[in-house]
Each structure stands twice: as structure tokens, then as C-alpha cells.
Image 1: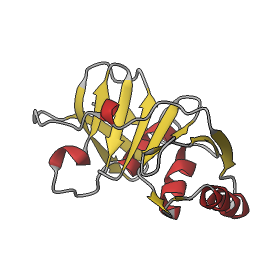
Image 2 (image 1 turned 30 degrees about the vertical axis):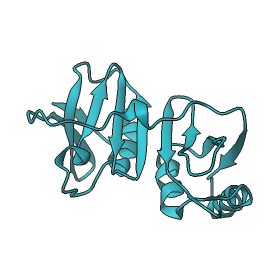
Image 3 (image 1 turned 180 degrees about the vertical axis):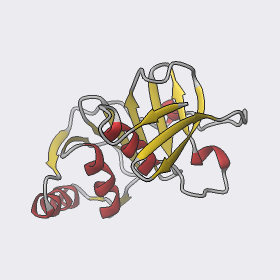
Image 4 (image 1 turned 135 degrees about the horizontal axis):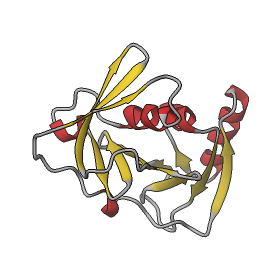
Length: 165
């Protein structure tokens, strides 16, 4: 078991992962995070959060338990499959733009920038991104209806957007 207190250097990574995982999903493994070769993945089936992290060494499913201000990361002994995230994460596109989520004005501008490019992103997804960082690079896919990749220095998020087509 790994304990992440409020002052822990990795705290924002686990807050980001916790926001990205399923919340009481009927697909049990979506309620967990998956550690694979130094990366940790969380998905609710609609979006994917991924961070680089060497805090947990053993690959597999883990539960995030939160008690007041502390996260407990506990190995899950159910050998259930987790989605193959490598099939969902698009490659980085040459067409990119930066968004800032520092405050509500910047968030509104980010929504406008996404909208101008026919990317209709749920506002709650931007709130999830802000948990980890205020600055993200958006990689615009070459074709309609492909997942949109958001990158940061050591985190990724993927969302299947609605498109105005």
C-alpha cells in the first residue's frame, strides 16, 4: 500500500488519476488505475488520464481509496482486464495549440479555441485537466471523430469529442 498525504509531491498526479477513473462503474476495472511500465492509466470509458510515475513499481490494477486528505493506493488482487490504453492514445499531431486553464476567463477562452476548431469538449473535462495543470497542448487529429490528445510535461489526457459535422 502506498500512502499519498496532502503535502506529497505526487499528490496532484493521483488527484488527476482519481478524477479520470470510473466512479462506481459496473465495469469493475474502470474503478481502478492500471500501472504499466512506469505509466499509470485511469479511464471512465469516455476519457483517459495517463501520468508517468515510478512510485508504484509492480504492474497491475490498483484501487485509489481516499480518506479525508489522504489517498491510499492499494493493489487489487482481482485479475480483471483493463482496457489497452495504447490503442486509444493518438500520436502527437503537428497541428497543435496551447490552452490555459488558470481561471474562468482563461477556461472560457480555451472553450472558444476548441469550438473554433470544431472540437466540442465538455467543460467538466477541462476541470479535470486543471486538477493537474493550468497549461496543456491540444493535438488536433487529422480526421473527424478521432480522439483528441492533450499533453503536458509528464501527463496525457485523451477525449473522444463531439464534432460539428
